[in-house]
Image (cartoon, rainbow, N blue to C red; front, top):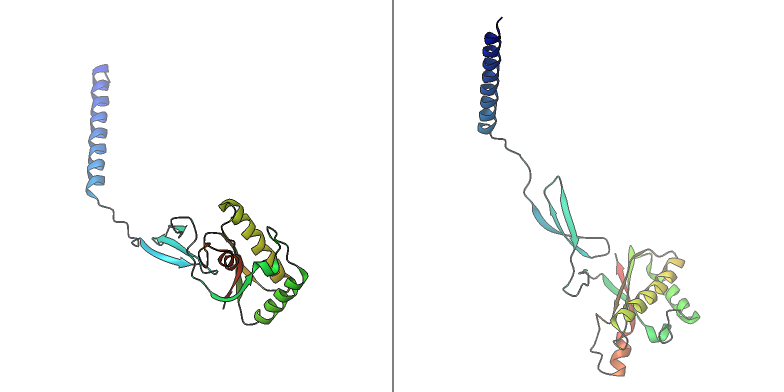
Length: 190
């Protein structure tokens, strides 16, 4: 084979390869591929302690985020409010330790309800006299103290929440109103 024939053969092979690639590209473009899947369906999922979560799911992959109010509080469906502790009766000012009489009353409360209740949610609240940050921490410590008493008698705690001054029962405009807002609420989830 001569050099000229080899060059012709190489050019011919390159042309055939180019035409083959071009044809495959056209076939790939003309073949439509349909992916069958579910549509995204937005829903609200409620977790065991009653808090809502926004959910978007297509069956293969999903996304979930907690549903919160503009000020960051979780949106939770309240269980049955089955107990409210006026914190002035259980805690000293700015303290989270429960006195002996208060522990005894709480143990009695949880023992009498734990057979009828699946779990409890404990929510701590304060008045508005201190900073928001301080009140959140104080209400968290007080709610934890109540939850500790509940756990000591075998009650199941689904969640412990701290609202501080963000969820007042009445406006914080007088000493008696502030006393009503200093509380720990116990929700029964049946």
